[in-house]
Image 1 (tube, rainbow, N blue to C red):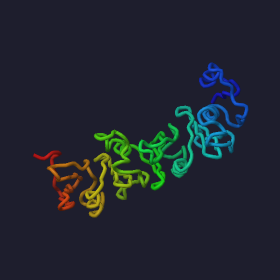
Image 2: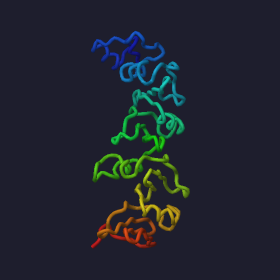
Image 3: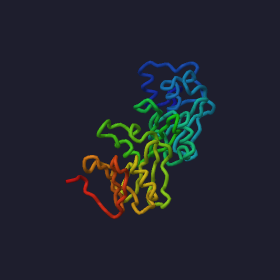
Image 4: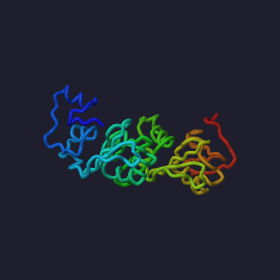
Length: 263
């Protein structure tokens, strides 16, 4: 990484020079290059939430990037992702998954607030971490993350926290080894290569769970729940469907299939 403090060749250094920006006198000599630039000009240096550096720049164990630890978090850098801060519970959750050597890889954004303002999120090479005070920090990735993002697209096209809430588990392999799932505050998303990722919630989810989740005769969901006829809501699974009405509750029909629309 080129150091903006020493004037070494680099795009960042050139931009700083062109703008006539002078590196602050209090810049810590242990923090340089792209990490140093981000620390001083994006995160406000030692005056910001990261505080003072605790280490010099350290090469990551996988040799793909570098990081510096600070009082209030870390900054991680790689040539293809750039430099991004991590702090708090999202950083801790990412660390439990193996840091940059784990399934999520390096951060590709800084931490930000969710659209509702009730929690926080951060994107990584391999997925995202979501955090709220009542749910903790959990990973969502791949097709499950795409479904989570699109589950309310007909209403808001935002991430599905208003329908499913925040994740309360990271993506987990199903006990039968055929797929994966995330549990959320108000439902779940289940995925398998054969069926794709589909949300399950409410009374239909309760009935499906009661017959053994994906290990029961119904297997994995193959579509989202939808209104089939007036107030009759149905959801198709591999081995049948579950129908729900407010008056009768949820009822399981094994080995039967319904068209997408009634009549």
